[in-house]
Length: 478
Ligand SMILES: [Ca+2]
Ligand SMILES: [Ca+2]
Ligand SMILES: [Ca+2]
Image (cartoon, rainbow, N blue to C red):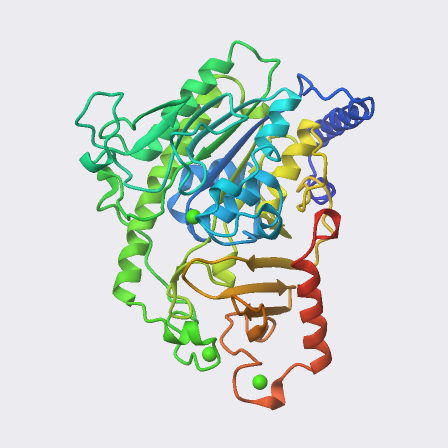
């Protein structure tokens, strides 16, 4: 909050900041005497998480830009600590790193502890909670998620559902996409693009809460856009997209410095470009969804009383280093779009350079809701001054795909280790001097030139730091 306060100049805004601090101070006092109910003044919390949206894609989302960038703060150095769907979603909802959630792969949804989650703590504090979209990959839709007052959840899959049966029977083999809506398994509405289903569910939920302004709500909107299959909405199937500018590491010419799995990867630039085009068009529908939800909030007079966050569950490489998709420990494989707005409380038209992360979302929500988990979360509230000088990103489990890895990074150095699945031994290291090599073109530990290597002392220091961070909990985490 202090960083944001400093960036605010207008007296009117300063006044509302002061009011916000009074509310927060009052909330802290209430917390001390053990009354754990959300004050009527607690803001709503709207969390929108897209699926596989890479950074630098807001150019196709003008309404989202207006709502979140012109009227809010953009975190330009935000990351997902494990850049893969299910582990990242578990980290978002728990405020904990993958090594602490136990959700290490996309098959680990059953390991997610719903009783140690944002939705649980907010509900306990008096928030009405709702989720619409993708909860966790491979979640058994015969099982209802807990600690939600209202929900409609589904998994990755087609973005359109085409129903041929009765509305209460779900037949995936007939082209229907199944969802669990408030405990009833049924097909998603036929012929309706998925982002419109999310918007419609959100609208119904907002209507249902209008009668009780004293109860704040937490609404988690999780469209699977722009995840594969790469099917844009019909109306955007041929929509113009921004021209492509290849970054210096686009299909990196010399990958002899890279780990063996990168050197062995052979993507097709034509496929990358086709997927990029489709994903950008899919994001146009996500932009519609964002605007529809905000228009609904405007009509309900709730926009100013809502802290809203927009982000992606993980990034997605479009040919950088010759790679496509995830989960890769390179800048655009780890960084994600992340923006936050709360009129009068979070600075508008502001770019925040701090290291922000998916594990910070839950602590941020905890702070404004005056909710306290029994053990400290790993992340930090984004409304507090940040002391984070490095980030930790990690891939701690796998069922196929790239090897296990972990990365520590400052503003000037990126250091990554790869590990053997069984022994945990380090199998490869990457070190980039980000000041001279921001595009990660020359791994100084893999370029065959010993004269430019970092000192053994520096490497052992980074390695020890990484070992410590990979075992961190709560306040010991970066
Ligand atoms: Ca994802
Ligand atoms: Ca290279
Ligand atoms: Ca070297």
